[in-house]
Length: 375
Figure 1 (cartoon, rainbow, N blue to C red):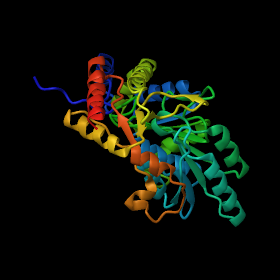
Figure 2: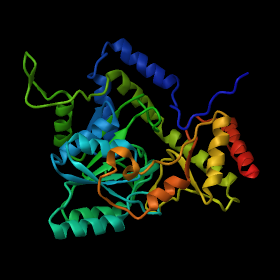
Figure 3: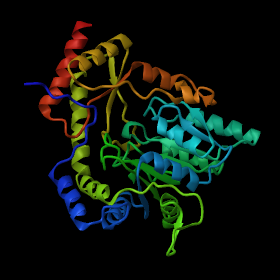
Figure 4: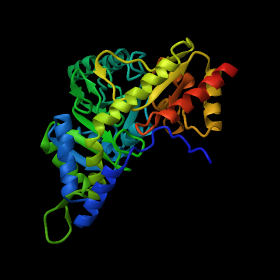
């Protein structure tokens, strides 16, 4: 019998999601509008505590609309962490603005408040403040908003919180996504909650959400014919997928618990190996367990593990390659100190999905152990 491939973060779906999809299907609402979509937005608002919620076709679409919501436009600069998925930087280009990268700190691997402060201070002296700061909650862990928010408020620079990976995480008791001026989630297939593809914009104001919803619906206004008051986008989430999202949200607590259990098992299994360090837990919040990540003192051992896992049909990956090393952004300015490059060079993401069973988790650990003992 063939061994089934173990994925990095496979969708964790089952009878509840299937029933929700069929219920939405049978209702006849096979469109990017309908009662499940409205209810999903209400569920997100209740979960986060922010009344403004718009369910969208992707987290990237949500980032695009978030930039528009805070007024970013042609020729503006936006400060973005260099350690992130490419969508964060791509969305800045969508509005004809320029991403300017800021390196990481070592407490949570998120954007460095120290470097951010230097960058904002110098830009203030030059009269070149950015139009926004985008903060990414990397691998599900919130950034240091206790320092970031006062810095941005000092210079009246809005904050977009890219919480694509952080649904269910908290900072000081507040929900991820609600720590800046507007927040973004992703419901891609590999996220802790998935709608197969999808995302959301959340805001403290229903006016902001209503404006984003209007833009996401081709800027259509009420009329018998198709009337539009501006350039809009086709960004709304399907009613069918919203039903699936509602079922996933109902299971969020259990999925977070399982991902944390998986992380604990990895950490216990390799606690004796001084050459492996897992992603640190920052003191300011609770992590949703999205991906378990580690760094190796010796990069050759990291590469041995990746090769062994691949040979055993187990998916793993290096950490996000910094944006300033990516071809589309090679000429973009950056406030860099080498931290993100070092983490990328030595880091690995391990299978972490909440559907990962105990036997498969042990298979991953045994494969890693053999690889490390041989190297």
